[in-house]
Image (tube, rainbow, N blue to C red; front, side, top):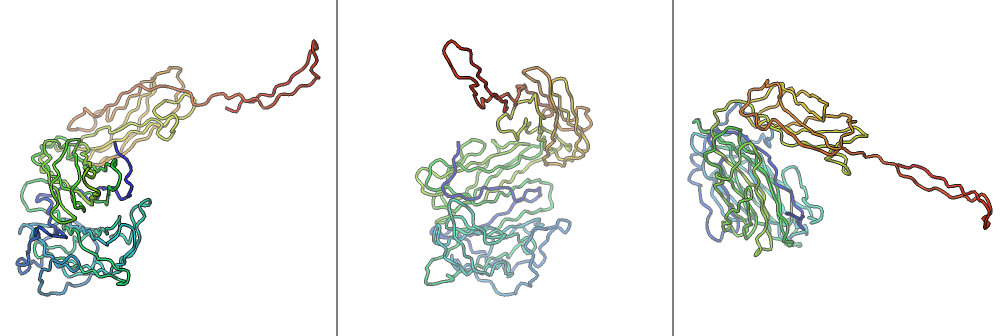
Length: 467
């Protein structure tokens, strides 16, 4: 059971998923580092590679392109939450980079008030942000947007940059400087968390399926809010060797988590107001199905916020075939009074949601719907691997039966060779109803004669059917 959070944020949704041979690299700078967990990797900057070793066959169309030439200079780390220079841990030397994301959480002093910040953000010597951040946050409205890369929820700005074009195997560094734009207003901006994520190949025969879910979800004041995010399972027929789940959060106390309804351990935060939790969820991981992470603040905490979560699954699949499945069947979904019923007096709509969880595309196949004794067929020209589609049937049904058998069969002709046919059929019994009824209404009563005792009188009643 879940309830709306008093402080409205943004749910975590998948911004990227893919398959690589190396994995999903992650390294973070933790703000408010009272435990001295941050590591100085500045010795690797001298070994930085000018060749980023990206696979030229893979494009990075969403990357924030910047044509500036990085300034070559000696980099010295500075662990200062308002004026940071951080060198990230090197990737494996044989890494071929497929994509890279820089995700940063910045504390800006107040839950609602605007304290403008002058921010300059450079990654590997290229400027990505050079502006004043200024906006208010309204808890009833939710996320405030600065631009396509920067938003605010409560007292934190979230910055997300696609840095695929500028990331390197080693020597990646972040420079972030913040000062108050208006000293008279006060405020004390600080970095909470700065994470670099890189999906990469390494030339071997391992296979990793990775997912990045990004948002800005918050739980505060109320006890009932439970947030959730889902990760698609790997292909049908896969053998899963390892599944690693990570939560990246901005809070002084970790939240309470469940994965596929199984409780997960909550570890203490690495930073003062930020942390990362890592779990091995191999035993509870689902193939070819949604995997759900739920989170909420602990009973002893006043506040919890999560900004992104990742899943990395090492798997092997020898079943190089499509695998079609029926995910859901909706009966008259747009009629809120009578959905999940078959209409006897108006057009019906049945929506069949399909998914291909196999490793290969499914070419042309039919979806067959049978309602009572009537059969209807729709063709799907192609359904790519790990993609979904919906097929809509519209028809009239006039049988007098009160109960109707409804059947759906995907690829009844067995045109597509699949991993399994077990999820290709759906059968359910539905009630057949009328949705239009008479509604008699007395519009008036007319007494045409004087009413006298022992005399016949004429009374006229006007009735209409407004149904």
